Amino acid sequence: MNKSTKKCIVSSLNKTWIFDLDGTVVKHNGHKIDGHDTLLMGAKEFFSDLPDGDMIVFITSRSLEYKAETEQFLTEAGIRFDAVLYGAPYGERILVNDTKPSGLPTAIAVNTVRDVFISEEFVVDEKL
Image (cartoon, rainbow, N blue to C red; front, top):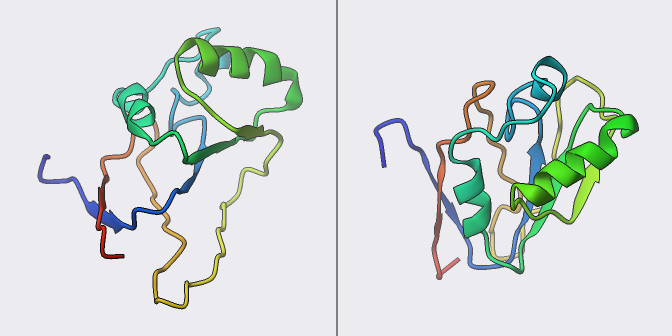
């Protein structure tokens, strides 16, 4: 773990991972600029380490015209997903969720630098 890595302590419950696509998982607008998508360094390993019971949702401002090529790229790159939501506005993505009666917060937000995959380390605490 490098000095800039932040640890996020999470429970052992199955999770829902919601990721933006361009600039977060793949090179921003690479599908337009380069004619194809390119995974950011560390993305493939991160997704392959997620437990099978976790849900993975991508949200993107890409229009539905890119649906087939986007999902084909993710599949061929070995990135599993449960859903891809297209046509999202370019503004902020706001996640709202409740806190469990135990006090466990059920929403975590991570902002990252464009075209740099997240550096956070998600550490399971079995006591949560």
